[in-house]
Structures are given as structure tokens and as C-alpha cells.
Image (cartoon, rainbow, N blue to C red; front, side, top):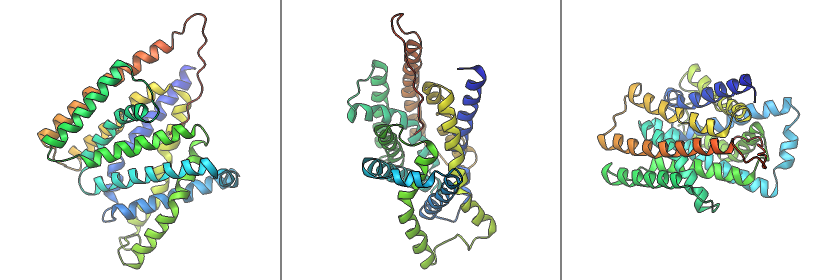
Length: 312
């Protein structure tokens, strides 16, 4: 791996996670559109953009021919899991609970590790057990001291964890652009139905809030695709452990935006809950770095083969 290739990968990862971290500002600017309308337009305009690029690359019909059997089932499950994740995230921003969304993405690595044990039967290393235990403690604390179950955080963490698990089970079947296209194909029918229903009931804001609002909704496709493609580029250039550490920039930015720009109020219990989760993430990060170092020093009689990592 050349230094230039690694440097470009790091820049791409920072840009991808930085854009995702600033998403609350974009969704906040889409008011008065509700979470359901924003989700529908995000799906449809993303599909339009992806289909356009695939047509230019003569890959659209190849993708449609592949969507059958086990692949179609897996892509469909992944699509509706990410659809739930998108909806709850936009709902959180629209209702002034961006900080709960940030907590969900802090919890996501811990949930992913736990799913590896529960679903894949993976064995955890000691520090991973510590991180999962502390993460569970944080959820319990926030439930009892924070005044109720942090359902937004848990739904976001579990839906994205389930999405990643589904993609892992599918393997590197589709590249990033084709994968996003396939998922939006599955989500397009209900999204079209929702847009029609909102228009029929007079609740659509697409053409009633001025040109700027219309253009913001149409730009949802570009806003969705750009960080994904940056992430895909990063995944080809830098180790997964590096990406895993950079990913925390997203919830950090979300939290900063929620407190400083959107002026959301966080209780003391909420701050304590965040602190508990951060402790868990420190243990998880230490374990990831130590494991990466061990893998870079294989025994003299072994050769480690590093295969390219496909993005989620």
C-alpha cells in the first residue's frame, strides 16, 4: 500500500463520515416536510441518480438480471432495514432529538459486535466482552435514569447493525453503486405510493414551499450517493480498522450540531449515558488496534492474504 494511496483513502473516509455527520443540517433545512415525505423523496431521487449512472455504464440490465433468488431476498431485507434506519433518523432530526440519533450511532459498533455473537456464533475477545457489557449498562442507565427507553437510539443502532449483518451474509456480491441501486428498487414502490398519497391528501410540500425547497428535496439523491461512493473508495484504499476508528466522526459531529446549532437540550443523565458509551468505545478501539497490530506480524511460516473489503 503506497503512502499516497493510503492518504487518499483517509481523506475519502473523513469526507464520507463528515458529510454523514452534517446530515442533520440538511434534513433540518427540509422543514416543513415530514420524515415520511423526506424518506420517500430520498429513495426516489437516489434511484433516479443511480439508474442514470448505471445506464451510462451499461450496467442497469445486468443488475436487474442478478436480482433473483437468494440475492433478491437478501437485498430486500437489507433495503427495508436501511429504510427503517433512514426514517427514524430523519424523524429524530425533525423532532429535535438529533442527540438521540448520535447516541444510536455511537452504540452501533457495540450492537454489531453483539450481533456477531448472537447470530453468527462468533467468539468475542476479552476487551470486546467488556465493551458489550458497558454498552448494555449504558442502555439500562439511560432507560431508568433518562426517563424512558432510548428507543430512537436503539432502533438506529439495531437497524444499521442488522443491515450490516445482512450485507455480510450476502458477501461482496454487488459493488457499492449497484447495491444502493438494488436497495432503492425494492423501496421505490412504497415510496411512490407515499408521494401519491401525500399529494392526493394535500399534505405534500414538494411544490408548495418554493423553488429552493423543491431543489433541496431533489438533491437528496446526490446527498445520499456522494458519501457512499467516498466510503467505497476509502474501503479500497485503507484497512478496515482505520475506517472503524474514523467512523466516530459522524456521531461526534451529530452531537456537536445538535447542541451548538440546533440548540437541543441534553439532561445530565443523557450526558452521563454518552460518557458510559464512550468508555465502551475506548475498549473496543483498543481491541481493534491491538488485533490489527497482531495481524501485521504473522508467524514466519505463514503468509497473511488481505482481500479487498467491500463497503456496507
